[in-house]
Length: 451
Ligand SMILES: [Ca+2]
Ligand SMILES: [Ca+2]
Image (tube, rainbow, N blue to C red):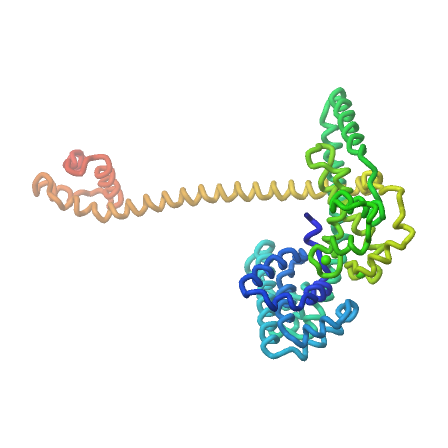
């Protein structure tokens, strides 16, 4: 599930993980590790520095002083950087571990930079790591060796900001997906002849209508919606609906709050009314977008302190709201287009530019490929010529010895030496002979030429 990746703001990640403080007390070492591992996987924030973030938190949690401060701190203290100051009081070996983590992270970022540079520019350019490291805002690049309060502050700020913009980026991505889909649909229809096009248009319209036929979707977070989960998922008596019990049941990791993932799980029942992976007309990308919209709707109304978590208190308060009794039904995303016609035209224009650029690049690459092939052929030719030259030279060296061997008596040897031919010509002829005639046979035409 997509939503699993954008779980918690780092700050709350810190808070929520520090709550079950006795969790490790009676758990044997091995089992404890397994549990930590599973938990780590489920808490993947999807940030590119997720691992660094989690390792820093893990190390900080080993410090008793910091852990105590964490439990006492609220989300605002953490976000404002107040908590970061406590770093000055953590024990020496914890600081050493953090320094080590930071050095590893800096080295990882350097490798990223290098890989990026290798892929984009020529090898001879000197890499200015310090200036390039500035683009990463989750650590202080001025000091690349030790982990300081500023690093913790920057890490928290970056993670908070990045996670908040994550949802916006997802909406944007979805919009582009929908526009691309529409663009491809139109291009496809254009490629058909009139008769086929009309038939295809009818088929697509029918599919669209079929998708729209579904039971009423309850407003997320409303009594109707929660009661349906209570009755159908939890198998409980609708007459006995109790918000507090409901909250406890769906706080599946038992940390006292409903996080975004636990919240989104509540909408599965509603989403299944509209989306079925077996149906051609139901797009699962749209289902995930719908899930996100639902979560945002609930959070907007319920998460009053904006920490991206729903506490029991916030939840109970929400059941007193007027909106809780809303029975009007939820307007699904297909009822409103995700983009305007103008946005689609702009998107198509950008796409055409990109395609043209890609085409140009492909052409250029093809030409480079052809040039390389030609160069290779030339090199092969050169190599052949060189090999021939080497062979000839070797044979030239051998040639006088062949002549000195008297194959048919000393007489011929004398005749050969007295030859008036220019040296070069004579050599070449000798070659011809050695090449064309078996080496054991005596040079027959030599005497004729001599006289
Ligand atoms: Ca929870
Ligand atoms: Ca909250």
